[in-house]
Amino acid sequence: MNEQAAAQAVNFAILTAHRLGEPRVLELSSSRLRELRCGGKPGDFSGGPPWTYRGLRLCEVEGVGGRVLAWDRAREMEVVQPIRWPADQARA
Image 1 (cartoon, rainbow, N blue to C red):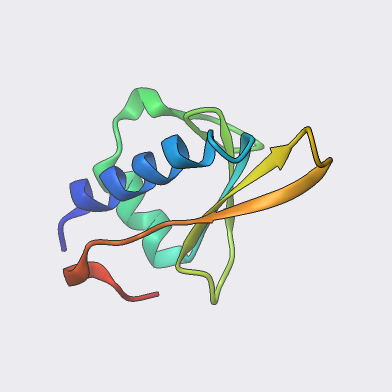
Image 2: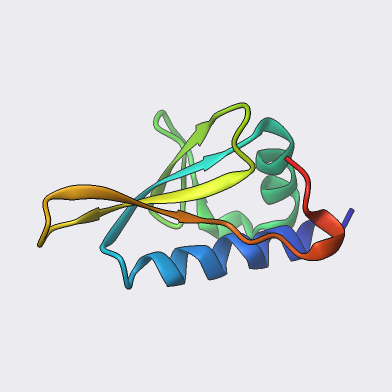
């Protein structure tokens, strides 16, 4: 398993979520969260609670491969940016 590829997929989803609104929450399954902790840079994480990655609150949610929740101020609603995993890691 390439943890750095997981971190890159998460970072790309965060960047993409900025087009939707203000990214606030990162939801990951426990296995994906483990991969991110192994592949991410230590400076990207802050101790908690709440635990954060690059300023986004980390939530462990089973059944979700990964997604970034962002707040769209114009529509005053939450929007979702799914994380697109590399083909060799496309599992939940």
